[in-house]
Image 1 (cartoon, rainbow, N blue to C red):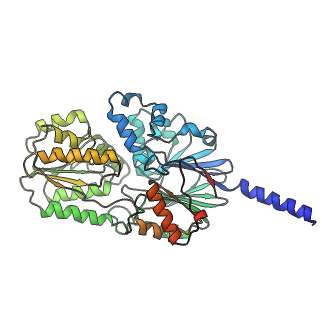
Image 2 (cartoon, rainbow, N blue to C red):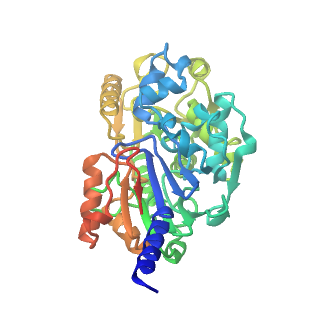
Image 3 (cartoon, helix red, strand yellow):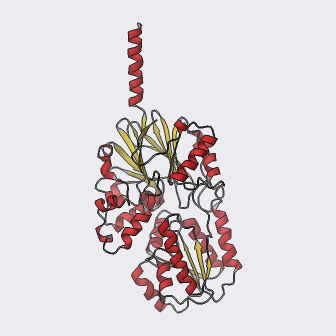
Amino acid sequence: MNIKHYWAKLIKKSNNSKNIMIEIIPVGGFSEIGRNCTIVKWKEEAVMLDFGLMMENYVRLTEDGDMQFNLSEEVLIREQAVPDLHALDEELKCIKALCVSHAHLDHIGAIPFFTSKLKMPIHGTKFTIEVLRALLADKKKNIDSQLITHPENCTFVVSKNLKVEFIHITHSTPQAVLIAVHTPEGVVVYANDFKLDNNPLMGEKPNYDAMRKLKNVKALIVDSLYSLDPRKTPSESIAREMLRDVLLGTTSQGKNIIVTTFSSHIARINTLVDLSRTLKRKPVFIGRSLAKYLDAAKAAGIADYSNNAEFVRFGSTIEKYFNKTKDTKDKMFIVTGHQGEPKAVLSRMAKSKMFPFEQEDLVLFSCKIIPVEENYHNRAILEEDLKRKKVRIFSDLHVSGHACREDHRELINLLTPENIIPTHGDVKMLEAQKELAEEMGYTPEKIHILKNFSKIYI
């Protein structure tokens, strides 16, 4: 072969390699907390991973009574409450599947607003799909033919060249998965959100074997929310003991007990139901989102409280329920509103006379404040209202569903990815993830701190 032919062949090979590199398009959740969405593309085939709300902006819109009935695609995009699908016209033609990692609204909550554009199959685990089905029903959308349920720890084909693997992982909602996108050039792992809980109260511990078996991991897209925290995230079993300590170790006889937590945290709710039985109190769930997630848990075969608990599902019936309830001290009230949302149940109880608060009643916050300014502001107002009722407030009875720095290290060691792409965090959080990767031997060109739509090829 002469030198001219040699270089022509080399250039052709180089160009072909470039054409078939994996393209990663960050759509939402990069250098911000919320509206999570990423596209992984190979040639003309792509998979969308999650499609969620920016909760702070969405709550602000829906708190405005005039706005909530006019949440068009344009309004939601303009107010940065959802990923900007308008910027994805070309990519949408290539997307063969939308795969969702778990049931939190910052990962699936935008889907019902964009069913006219999201015409592809939507894949998720049973619980996640049941929650999504409820969200769609709220918006009077029926796309059941697009919804495909998979068990955890399975692999399925989404196009000629792309396969997706759901790998069981622990989080603060059931049946969460890491999503591994298998392409002819290698694997992209989407780990957003997760924790490594080896003593979970619901479901199995993470599937470490499946993670170790992944070969040629080209990129790890990784949750960075607590990358600044130099710990391993404690197990959910620790939260159970915290709640036991307060509810069984504090004088509560003759007192009202009100607990607020994440509606999607079925393991935490299960703990509260168990403790209510120990206290010989009937659990009462108050709030629409609680009912929605518990209905999904029942449909998914995870938990069923319909025979031994009361449900007050709608805001319009709450005051009527309390008016007709003669004895409130033989119950445990599990209510929405842990972030201090002004229209949620706990804020309404604290601001009015609908609930018969008495001195030294117990109010438990089994949660952390989601770190955005509006939540801190709302919680401060709520706690001041509760203090005026002279109740006892127990805060931070919680462990996170998000990995801390040492969990990140463990995941990177398990997967040995070629590239690290931090997500689900502000700039400081992403930089902390970068520092960890550098500490573990990654060079700067293998660590990609991205902004939405700053696509890269790997």
